[in-house]
Length: 455
Image (tube, rainbow, N blue to C red; front, side, top):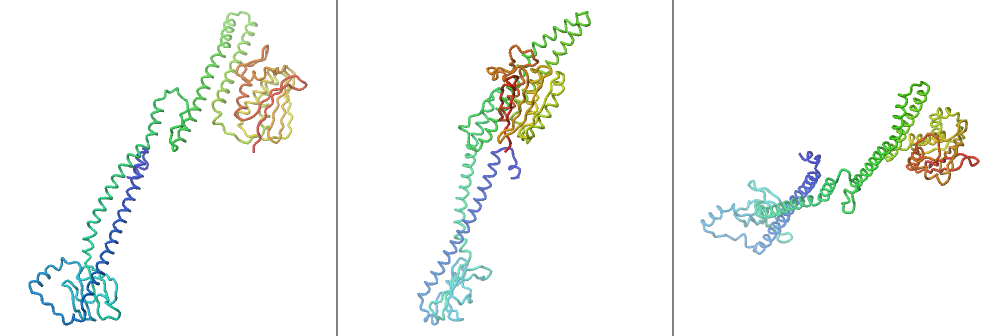
């Protein structure tokens, strides 16, 4: 039953069961120890009474005991004998093996010949006996004894008082625990009410100022979740906005070209129009691909896992992927590798970064030109440089082209202005550096990427 409550989903139930169990066990231990303590104190008290009773009998002149003949009326003896069960303490005085004086209930037999406390059984009753020798080498022994019933007469009322007090304390403690647990859970209930009242669009972080330390990690996790959701929603919103904005013009152009092609009777002109439509579809498809890549890079950067990679292997893979496009423009891609520097990053996003840099270089390089891919490393960074022979970028425009949908003025090259923006995003969450500079001999563009080397 207790295990069922320990596994309950309610924190209140778990705390109540746990704390009440602990309190009950403590109460039981204290109650039992109190009873043991009471019994010990009563034992000491009764033993003290036996000792005092025995020493009181020392006032008797033992030398006259043998000649002492008590003269008691028979009716008194009969009364005392009938009431002997109501007497709890009794005595007997021995001289050697001769019983010279005793109380009515005395067992009339030796229990101990040494001065000490003894536990004995007499007529089925347990008795506590104290034997006193009046003086050294004395032939007399005084035995004072008490039924265990005398203990009950002391222990029972004391135990009842202690038990009632302990029970009252337990009930009071249970009430205080319940109130304390309820008060302790108030901040959690207030937090739940705050979150429940939020609008579904409200992804602002929760203030930690009045939050108890124990639930701060929960609130921090919620804030992290809100941040990730905010980034994801913003990415989706930007994707939808960019897609709607950027696709509107090419789709309108495609529709117009298709209408013209339908009306065109000349097959040669119609083929030219269809070729333009095909190019427009390719550009639109490329736009959607780039937008999807950008959205994925922006939204998934928190969940990307880094691994140890070879920069040369990544570069070779990216060149292989883009080789066909380069060959279509008769552009040669050469690689200069100075060692094989290692990096620590995410393979797929880094391949996207390299393909975008190479794609941008091919788009802006004249046919028959050459693109150089250089790889080298130093103590802190692994470096990648892509150098083309295109028109380059003026120094005052280099920061601007890293923004979304920005293209160089007067450029006739294919592109939508997202390639370097995607590169910049990937660079940022890799804690890398991106540098745009002049190519060889001051012509073309050199795109340099510096990635931190693994420890």
